[in-house]
Image (cartoon, rainbow, N blue to C red):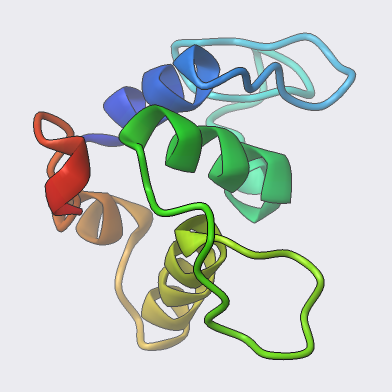
Length: 104
């Protein structure tokens, strides 16, 4: 999956971003003119909506003691760990198959 596909799927799942203008070309919610906005990838609502569109398991509790449940929270943490390990946002989303929601 590309970054753009991930954004489109999250929107399909109900994501409407931060309460700021949205630029679908770069995924930026602050200003369409200041480059690609990667802030959305740190927004839990983005991951919840992406999980909804991808039909990720809603009942999983990967992190006991954490109120939020669902496969989306695991994917979000996995995403952050990939960044810590030096991989790009693009690298992470390439691992997710946008055409087969149940296989992610």
